[in-house]
Image (cartoon, rainbow, N blue to C red):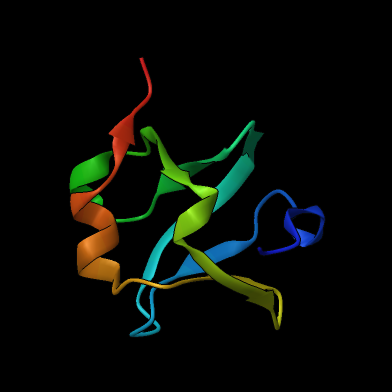
Length: 78
């Protein structure tokens, strides 16, 4: 399991393809609350489960999915 204590606000989130999919707002239980960076998202907040994190290193949250897969899996904040 990934040590989520290393995750800080405003860390970039990258997929396994090094694509940038968002920026961390904060951890919400077992979810990471993010602001998406793609233009269609218009800065909306979304969530990914911590199980999608492969590592937290080099100042980035690295996912075990490609950026395209992660974008398909977003859960939208209400």
